[in-house]
Length: 408
Image (cartoon, rainbow, N blue to C red; front, side, top):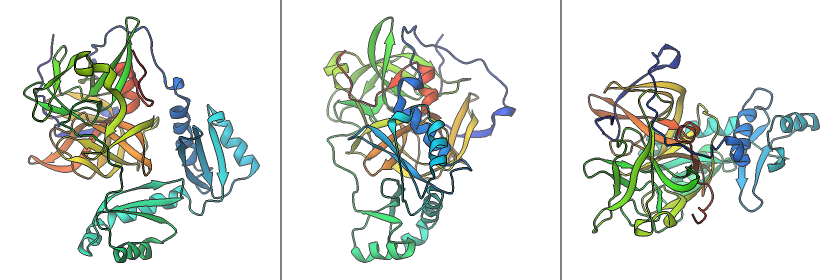
């Protein structure tokens, strides 16, 4: 029986600790699959989570400086201010796939210091705006051992003022438009990618990621969005400006009330180029796109994240405030093991869109998909909750594409 939900793209919520929640049987509607993916199938993603968890642990936090993925050698690079042979051996011993990791030392700043500096810059956003400097986002540049600071202005005087405020050797300023232009539009024709518009003729949501799924021995490419957006087996379309909407496919796997992921997926049909136009990309800011390089494997408090949505576009001044939360929707549904982040632009229509973090200026790790917003008397507060990417992939029983899709 199909659940007729008020398919608003985001719903005001109240969050309580998971331990206090009353368990509700999950809505399980996935088709039978003959291939069940696991994190271990992706050593890069798995080991990135290892490094992230170990690096901030007490035994390494005073020397750990961050990690990044280098596409040229397909290795994860972990760097430290200094590291002894004993510490190196112990760190490597804690990794499931040490063969994909390169360890180096000599960084000037620890990861903990750069995170505190990033938090300070985010906190100063209002004061900077008064001074004529408007932040477009902040992030970490572990390969440069700096904090990335994006500003709208390109004035060298303002750039030098920022460097003087926060340390020229600790910040990298990205002025003007700091991301690469691509032929991507939320209401443009395929290729299919996260961040594009999805609708059923009445309600609109945002696509999260492209996934690969095996059903009855056959491989399908799918688009993922929030489970509260549409119902199974509803047909979902993609609106193209100036053209008739394109039929994407039918919802065939859905999780929402009582599950650990507010997520659903649909096969991309063979119409209009279909699955041949599937990608491992997401639209970040409208008109721009990036490939997804790997998936985060650990819910991490304090992580800086961005979200992409059809209503409020890309917004990047979010920081994870709580992990493993139970979210109660005002309509009565409950979803477990969610992540909450505060505070930037998010509104109705952004649901299902990708949540991610930049670990290099042009490099993205998938973090989750937008689930809900918080509102005060109907006015969004800028706080959101999202379903963690590993819950999305395991509930929907699919891979999130981190390499260009291969022919079906």
